[in-house]
Length: 109
Length: 114
Image 1 (cartoon, rainbow over the protein chains, first blue to last red):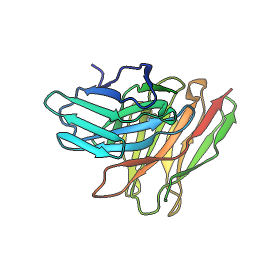
Image 2 (image 1 turned 90 degrees about the horizontal axis):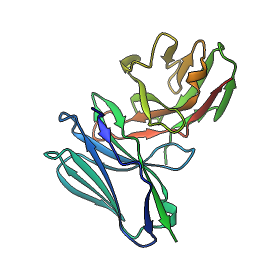
Image 3 (image 1 turned 135 degrees about the vertical axis):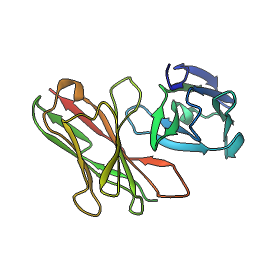
Image 4 (image 1 turned 30 degrees about the vertical axis):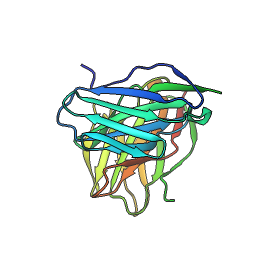
């Protein structure tokens, strides 16, 4: 079973809308979860980290964690064309990051 | 803002040649990592390094790979005899010792083996 699963997309939303990105994971030991943004040909850029159940907000981004359901999500409010990228969900396991395949987001003007 | 820097940005090498990829982690970080991403695939963990030794390595990190921290600032990944399938983006990352567990990535080295 894959450790971190994401729908590869593309997820297409109009400018100004809310983009909702989802991720499920299989390992119950993990306590640390991260969302990275990756533009084509570039490196992963950390957007959010979340360690406890519930919501964590940072500007236009909200990360949500539900450990019972093994589910992490990222909401992007007021989506902008510059948000168009691949969003990588990752968990920390024994010190290393395990990444999902990523969801490609397209924000259309 | 402190950042992880990697050199070179692009390396082309012939199959069987040795390559060394270089990284300068964020200065107060103590944990260092190498990841790779084959085109179109997910980011994969290679190795983690702490206190001048490997703390964990993946199945990908076989005897052809080695890491070193030759001085107080650089962290290197050596591939002894490159294969075509080693072509990928290689990312160095570092994280702080306590408080945050967040890892910050360098801009990557694109390795092309021909």
